[in-house]
Each structure stands twice: as C-alpha cells, then as structure tokens.
Image (cartoon, rainbow, N blue to C red; front, side):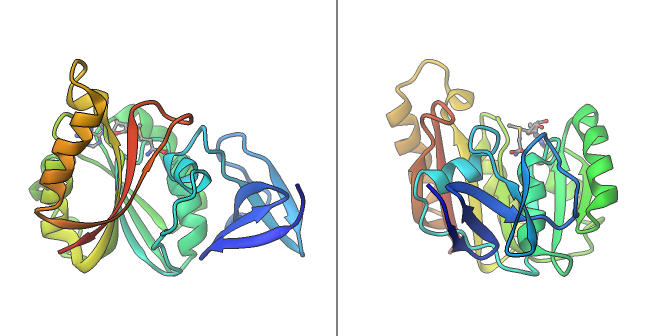
Length: 223
Ligand SMILES: C[S@@+](CC[C@H](N)C(=O)[O-])C[C@H]1O[C@@H](n2cnc3c(N)ncnc32)[C@H](O)[C@@H]1O
C-alpha cells in the first residue's frame, strides 16, 4: 500500500502506516520509525504499542483531539501514546500527565524536556483532590485514561467532574481483567457501560483485539 492521507486532525496514513507529524525533528520516542513525506517528518504510531493507535487501526471514527487542545492524561506511563498526542495538539496545546509510578515517570521526564507541551505529575488518579490545586483549576477539553485499576470508571468520573469542560470528551481504554479476572468479559463491559452512561454519552466503542486482549476503547462525551 502506498500514498498519503489525513485520517483525523494531526493523524495521517503514510504508505499504509498510522503516523503523526513529529513535533521534535529527528528524535523518536520508543524506537518507532521516522520518515519524510511532502517535506515534513512523520513518526510511525505503532498499534501494538498504543491503545489509541490500535483503536484508529480498528476503524475508530471519532478522534476529538484538536490542535491546541488541553488534555489531562491519566496513566501517562513512559509517554508512548502521549508523545503522539503531543504531536497532534502541537506547541499551543497542553498535556498534563498523571502517573502513580515514580519509575515510569523518571523515563517520561526526558520526553518532557524535548516536548514542552507535556507536564508530568506523580499522583494517584484515584485522588484528584490531591492535584487539583497544582492544576490551578484548568478545565480540560479531553481526559485520556489508561489505568489498570478495578475502579477505572469511577476514577474517570471523579476526574471528569472536576477537570473536564462541559461537553468535553473522554477517551477511555478499559481493561476488563483489572475489573474482574473471573467474570465474563462481555458482561464486564456491559456493567461498566451502565455506570458510564450515568455521566457520559457513549459516542463510540471499539474492541482492541488483536492489539490488546480484553480491552474496549471508548469515546465519551460528558453529559
Ligand atoms: C498501561 S500503562 C499506560 C500506558 C500509556 N497510556 C501509553 O499508552 O503510553 C498504565 C499506567 O497507569 C499507571 N497507573 C496505575 N494506577 C494508577 C493510578 N491509580 N493513578 C495514576 N496512574 C496509575 C501505571 O503506573 C502505568 O504507568
């Protein structure tokens, strides 16, 4: 397959590969390929490494991340996915990345030095009252959440109540096995969706197989 096509704002298909335009010329983040097309540099966005890329690969129709958007990223880890979101929002955008693990955050710091639109905070996403002051009451356009916790939906609800703009979007990677290792996966998603619908409109859902087992990716809009 060959050619160049824009899939969403800031997301491209270049020679059959999902890509973002590299905000930091000549530097990759996790070993992904860089290549030039039409005078710009692109980074391959690998679906086996990023659940949002996997969702795009699985024909997600809605990616509501605009240039200059403010994104609260819960479970930013080493910044693999966040680096592509950083490409999409550009230098006028902002990602505040929360993660509970100091070890992964140490690796993220190097990326934050190159990408000035990412601010890391070590914190428990389950306790947003602990970081509400440091965010100086910023309201976010988007919450992106990828934390393997039993109460994933409640973590999203709490953060959305405080930080998400009215009608703002949440992108949620829901891992069934973190909720129950024994229940039927389909039932887990059904029960979680009942809870989600109390606070969000479900715009879209995509099962991430074969890229991630027992994961559903949701695009949600705050009610
Ligand atoms: C699957 S990884 C995220 C990968 C990342 N989203 C990416 O695609 O590059 C999940 C992350 O959630 C973090 N995490 C788990 N529980 C958390 C919590 N309660 N608060 C904040 N981060 C948490 C873990 O430390 C881990 O880095």
